[in-house]
Length: 229
Image (cartoon, rainbow, N blue to C red; front, side):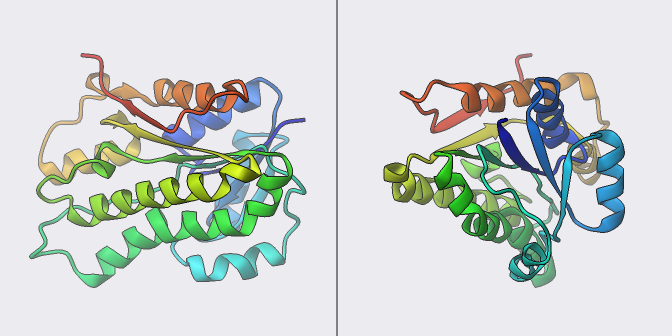
């Protein structure tokens, strides 16, 4: 059975990807930040396997996984979790910078490092759900954009390093997507959140699943997705 490990499956794009893969009968491993969140995910995805690890503390992930059963092989690792805190460079504190860099960049790097043996075994696939902010930086988005620019660099280096091991690497750059994070962004911007104006999380999930199911003779490296209206 095809096995996937997904972060951020509790909502938004990660949840949509998990639903799509669950519907086709694949084996799901879902990373939760704590035991309470793991129980919520178990109710949402009966039959999925849970792992607990806090992406906000990437230096503790190795210890956390070493005390749990992890998959013996993985066909894909989908990094979908992320956090955002907007503000000008003059306003953002080191705490805001460090949290976004930890969750959005350092944790994906560490989780990938820890699971590379399983991915190499199956000649698997790593998908980074990045952002349009990984390609450009706008006012108030410096810390988030820096974390996502770094995520692109991580993906590009990983792709070159693991090519001979048969591991494929894809970065997906969604534009504004109708998720709880987007509602938070609108609140910060002082704008009314109109869900229908933005990309549905299910549409981004389609791009992720397309990359995962591409025949072995090809690899989607970078894919930008923008609102269609």
